Image (cartoon, rainbow, N blue to C red):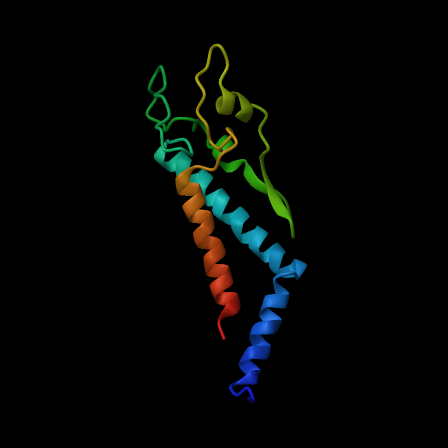
Length: 141
């Protein structure tokens, strides 16, 4: 029994599946995920919430500015420091950011990034959405 159909579309699909092993596509995915994570961190500052949705504890003395924003240096310090086909790294260029993230005996923690080994549900949804959009675009025939 002979096979019939549009073999050009089948060949196009075969090439696109093969491209999933291509480091450049993997790098595009990593780059887009890094941008998504930077946006999630920025959202946390805007909403004054940690990645898990809990509000940051208020300041002891209100000065009219947002929590963790005196001059905006910490908020602006989060940048993409490395991206390749296997992932990405985001960091903060200010040394005091870790004290806010983990807290000290004199300062409450106000988490800006996940740090308990699990991805917050809202972050997981955003990351899945980004990956889905990239793959849907890639596989469009």
